[in-house]
Length: 264
Figure 1 (cartoon, rainbow, N blue to C red):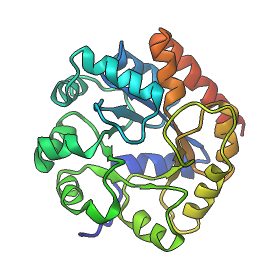
Figure 2 (cartoon, rainbow, N blue to C red):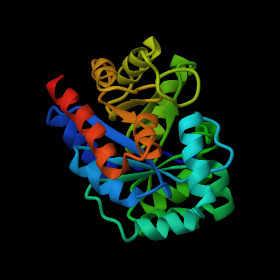
Figure 3 (spheres, helix red, strand yellow):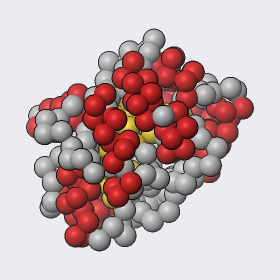
Figure 4 (spheres, helix red, strand yellow):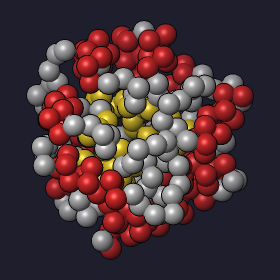
């Protein structure tokens, strides 16, 4: 497996700048193809998002819980496709870096080089592929590096300590700490493993460390950011969209996270 390029890309540069300015980072997730999703990206940026995850829906997700599964199903039933989503993104400029989140089958079927080039044409800076582990990321990462796409890798609570430095070294943009064992979804309380995960990663890397999965409220975001550089918030945002809140409702929620993180 090739080493990651030495210098940071657009996504990591933006997140490092925010962190270095003393800002806790906020990266909300939206399911592409669900409702007014492109308007929601603009609304999220206006509400204080530092970057935005754009989920490319897939029929057999391994990490997504019921909320995002429902959103993906609705989007697929409405006709969403990877190519259609990227074509739409190419006409959308929310003003913050975009990170595509999808599964390896989409990458494999589309072709590494073609998908990487399509992401760049769509204005997408990074990619999160949760079912593509470090040991198998080589071919995709090489194509992504060549095209200029930053591949964000994940570390789970069960990842051994001795494996974390290699994951952090190969990850680009940021390192995604999975906050708990299980699938995405809203929780009443923050899992203790979330702050532990952030602390373990911060001990082995200078790259921005964001924690996602199970971060559902502004209070939980503040709690995990005692150790993490920022949070990724998915199901809570998607729930607003599913319940008809639209871009305004999502922006209101994201704004509440932003305000809480800024207060600390």
